[in-house]
Image (cartoon, rainbow, N blue to C red; front, side):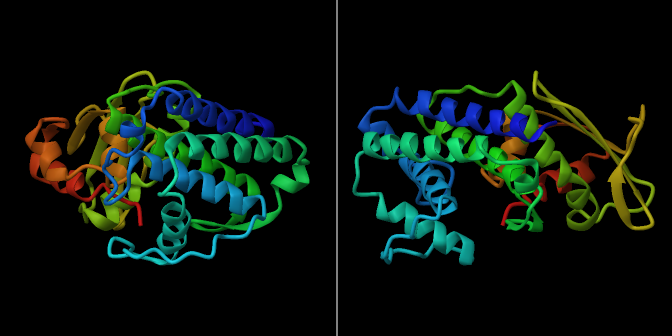
Length: 270
């Protein structure tokens, strides 16, 4: 995929967020979401703050009063941007989002292949500007889904951005199976993610290491079947795994005990 095709995806998710925001009442902007102490508006404020920082704009000189839900330095920086905008109306944050993302797109469209290949720090370690952009697409889509669930406006669960996001979550599943769930050697696990943006992911454990398999086994040790929304909410820590299991949002076949362990360990977000 070309660099500008990645920019196309980022623009697509930003336009989807803009269209969603245009439908929201002030009451809906202030509704709580699955992220502790964050409203619908807070998610958009987070995206605005990140993109403004990437434009080189200074962070606000502000200290939030409540940081009890903040777990690390990245979250602390995020909370400053979010809390600083909490006194505003949702429409004001949406207007800033339009302005900031418009400027970001202009700069991204002007970048050269060398610019995209330049080294930079990403949320998962050293990488390139292109690597960072791939994470931004995923992050923006995840927050869009947080907002949509809170206001009962499901959408954007199919298409190239949703497929990209599912692929990012899939990258973490060998870590979940091998390191977090401690599946033994010889184990094979199949994630069957249903829906247009879904995929089938097969993982095998050998030498105490889990890795993707090229061929999906006909009779894996355990098969976990879920839709894109559930895969996202478990992988990103939005839903309580016990609630997910009780609601039957994941169908298990084979070693159900191992399957339940994997479900409980799917959150890979810091």
